Amino acid sequence: MAKKSVRDVDVKGKRVFVRVDFNVPMKDGQVTDDTRIRAALPTIQYLIEQGAKVILASHLGRPKGQVVEEMRLTAAGNRLSELLGKPVRKADEAYGESVKAEIAKMENGDVLLLENVRFYPGETKNDPELAKAFAELADLFVNDAFGSAHRAHASTEGIAHYLPAVSGFLMEKELNVLGGALENPKRPFTAIIGGAKVKDKIGVIENLLEKVDNLIIGGGLAYTFVKAQGYEIGQSLLEEDKIELAKQFMEKAKAKGVNFYMPIDAVVAKEFAENAESKVVDIKEIPADWQALDIGPKTEELYRDVVQKSATVIWNGPMGVFEFDKFAHGTKAVAESLAEATDAITIIGGGDSAAAVEKFHLAEKMTHISTGGGASLEFMEGKVLPGVAALNDK
Ligand SMILES: Nc1ncnc2c1ncn2[C@@H]1O[C@H](COP(=O)(O)OP(=O)(O)O)[C@@H](O)[C@H]1O
Ligand SMILES: O=C(OP(=O)(O)O)[C@H](O)COP(=O)(O)O
Ligand SMILES: [Mg+2]
Image 1: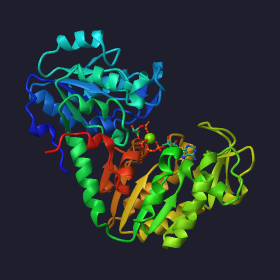
Image 2 (image 1 turned 90 degrees about the horizontal axis):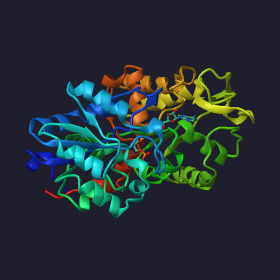
Image 3 (image 1 turned 90 degrees about the vertical axis):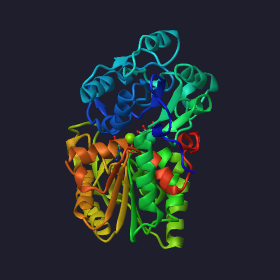
Image 4 (image 1 turned 30 degrees about the vertical axis):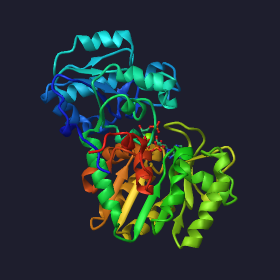
């Protein structure tokens, strides 16, 4: 059912709690990719122009319910201020008396950024007390955090039970574009899944096998599958208790006639570091004290062939640790394959995948770059995203 949007409500003079996804890649205290901040600008600018008091909330990283200095939202707030060309006040907390006092001082059109909502244990537990504490700050809830819409947390879902709740422009656009592309995808339809959130993302494979013709696995996710095939993976990323599931998925792919691809070679490193000693090895020969940080050249070729023959490609999760130049080649090669597939619909999702495509200057060659990785995968699976379900119907 269609959800109300920020356009459907009166916001002038109102205190508006806007959940954004400013979970941006950072290095040395600086934002290294501001895609997600730029993506939230239309909603923020609209609210400013309409004379609302704009209270922004986001998480950054996974601080596990306590204050982690490097995960403060200060740098994201500074970047937002540059992009808006106006001051953005930054609160030291995300609710409570000090925040209420800050809000009481706001004029219409002012912007306040709250501190990382995951500094409080109630956020990820979707604690109703925390949700109420957020709701007390505002008159209206706007959810524009598509990248976090698959999380039923206090600032994404809980708060919607205590305030009128509508979607922002980014949320609306993501749902429309992704929904449209996947309603009747042109075939062959290929999904490429990589990245580091193995526990989160391995589960989506089951439902994707019902929809795609080709499934490509890469990144940190791949090595649980390599292990499931009976090969040693050294120190590579492994989700031990998902090995059985990985085996089942490979069997299911076979039974369904879905082509299942995983790395045939890898770039392995002595340690997880920018300039680690590295070499290319066959996937069956990962040495015990090394770790795979990228796909190898033969795998790049294999994946390029599949992409070339596809009419729709969705890609979430980098193929390697692309933040280190030495291990960026596989991600770059796959990004180039998609960029070359000019007749195909190419959709990339995820905070880090979007950052990779920006880094390689290929963003404008893609059909759509989604701000959500896990969120877009769950949406494509056909799941109802809790952050969307909680919003008011039209
Ligand atoms: N082989 C690997 N080993 C460890 N980490 C990896 C590997 N391949 C990719 N990664 C990491 O995965 C991270 C992104 O994962 P994830 O958050 O799941 O993707 P996205 O944000 O695109 O949804 C990147 O920071 C990258 O360094
Ligand atoms: O970065 C995010 O997702 P992504 O890595 O799948 O793109 C979102 O901000 C969600 O973060 P979470 O996976 O810690 O809940
Ligand atoms: Mg990510």
